[in-house]
Amino acid sequence: MSTLTIYGKANCLWCKEAKVLAERYMMNYEYIDVGYTDGQKELMARLPEAQTVPQIFWHDRHIGGYQEFMREIENTLGGFAEQKI
Image (tube, rainbow, N blue to C red; front, top):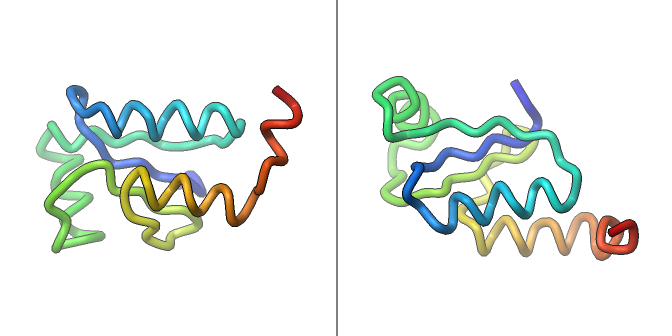
């Protein structure tokens, strides 16, 4: 399993933005589409109370949605990756 997992749906703007943010910071991630039964079952097994997407896990710790992911990156990585872009 990747250290970063993004659960989302194809038509979700914030899910797409979460992937863009991970790519901007050169993070390897696994994207699981909950629009399919297997993806939905996996998310419900990990986070039964989930009602929205994206739901993001980093190092097996639930981060939350896009906004929480963005704050976590800023708190953890700071501007490190932005300096390389």
